[in-house]
Length: 125
Image (cartoon, rainbow, N blue to C red; front, top):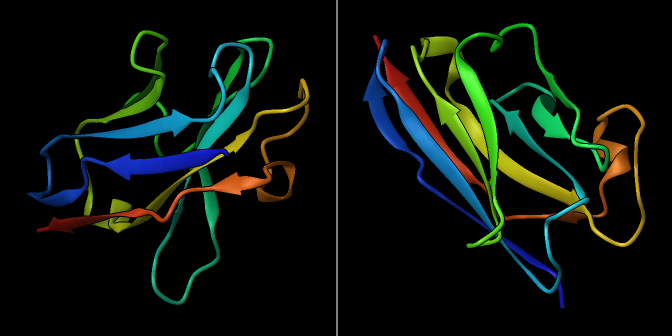
């Protein structure tokens, strides 16, 4: 049974940092396409960053240079290091995965068939 459990959210001031973690169970993350998405109130869910089965990554323009994806195969987690946080980064952050087939395409929300419950990130000015 596949499960994705996010952690690491919280409240920070603008300029601060947070590290989100997505703990995967039911499969091994190596070679699996996974991503982080976020959704703010009144807005659509949007890609933050993703890693494809090939290992290539994509970042939203708004987070490039500030956020970094990393995979910890020992703990089977996909982590998102978020630095220089801005008020606009505040949202619910979701982890997503497509564990049962290799995927090399665009990191749209439709590409993923498993989602976590989300972790809230609040950024104050």
